[in-house]
Length: 111
Length: 114
Image 1 (cartoon, each protein chain N blue to C red):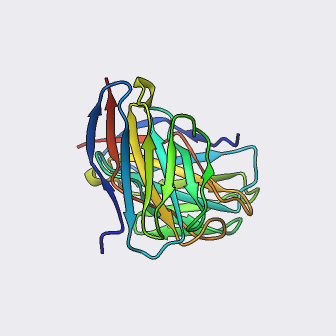
Image 2: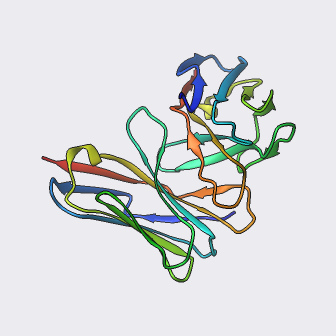
Image 3: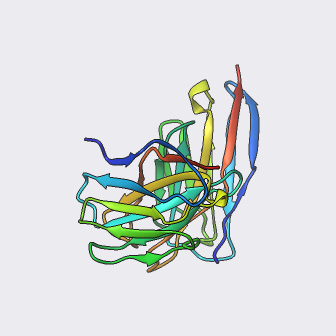
């Protein structure tokens, strides 16, 4: 089946640092979504991207839909303790009824 | 506005027991989904229901059945639980499948099979 390769799998950073993570695929996607999961909770949608090249921000978060439609990245600027969690990318193929999820990036922040 | 509500939040079963996980959404969404989440594997789709009255298999359907009871409710049933089904189960919903309709998730059911 379709696969998304998300990297890095984990990150250990200092508070205040910027963070960057990405997802790549061999398939072309029409939609890219970024979710965050806090411990004990379900994933929460952060940013949705619908056009190749689209760059969208949500506060300190910025995500881009790659121009080839095969990748996407998420940046977090000036990290704070509440950014800790697991970040998932998800892609949807044209006309598909299902999302494909990456394996997740676990973010840990040292105060 | 509760969004997607899953019950129970935790459950421990013995091998061979049966169990139904409940999910309800109050967003008037047409499509609903069941995922399982295992360490290092992200979310894998078990079954989904594109609209009331329809259900389809996802990536890992074996050992599970689903029922789309009405537009609001979508249940997942384990007929004979196995240790390999120990996981965290998430229900999600979206306005419809495909197109620009993000999925919204519940808080999960943590299921342990002994």
